Length: 426
Image (tube, rainbow, N blue to C red; front, side, top):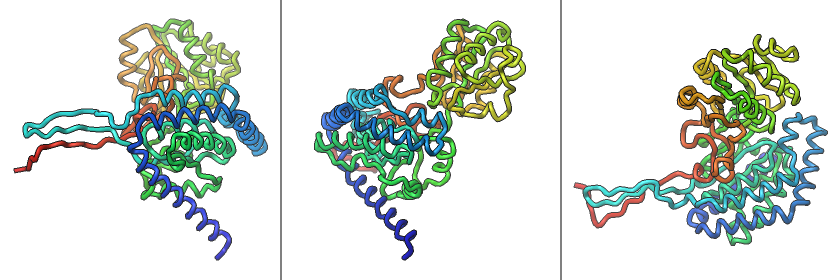
């Protein structure tokens, strides 16, 4: 047998072992009481704080290796951890523990004329495979959310974050042990071999749902190749539209935060649209703010006229998620022009309108076909934690099963529980 075949067989056996262990753990987790899950989450949070230096050292090694490989700046930014981000992971796990347990919740109930009492009850999905790039905090968020929702997780992080993810996964294992729960409830694929992703996409006997989180090419590949249902998060090509009825100072604050708070996250704005009626007064100020903050602006004729530093926008720019300090900018004819532009070029992720006109706002909120729509608020609020949902695995751009932030509740299904007293069907 060749070395390649031996390697392939070994990986196949390794992935099947992960799958079997996860399936067994999922069966146990489905009936674990809420206090035990919460104990595990809090113990994992404590372990992250206790092992902060270890996690940071692992991340420093990942970042150094990524720089040597020439990884792009936005990817480095997503990869890098610091004290605040490590603490945010620990706090996120505690927030998940504080969140109500969705499992066993009665969604609806009714009684039929024949006396049958019917309930629709939340249950776990089972085993969730999560495939992600760069951001090691996804290890904590995804593992914690799966545990809270009674699901076992198989996590496949990117090769660039293998050390960081491993250090974080070790803390999750500490939490599981402390609560007496199976360590196989949260497993990290221990190899950087890309073939592991292909194996996960075919493991229908062991994985119930795949959740990809990463770049557009990764997610498209998974959506096309997976034999398992996918909850997908496509790119965050998000827009802020400044309406004729906008408060100019409010618009300045929202636009700057939406674009520049963190340019590398999926909630960052990638397009700025301004109502033609106010473009002469408002556009130069907004464009200057962005340029002075270090953001490249690619604009249409009106935006270029507003500031000589603006370069010409291309057709491709309107469809691009930059994840960098770059924004496409232009004018449109009112709210209907903005709606038409966003529904054609956006990725149905998150879009915002800035206006003091309630009628314009409601028209925008109702007609924009995106998972999240906002009025007078930054697109960077596209985050499960900011929605009061604890953490989230991602922002789903699907319309089936889950849309918008995917938190613990969105990682559940339901079953019908029917109670009778000897009824038979005539």
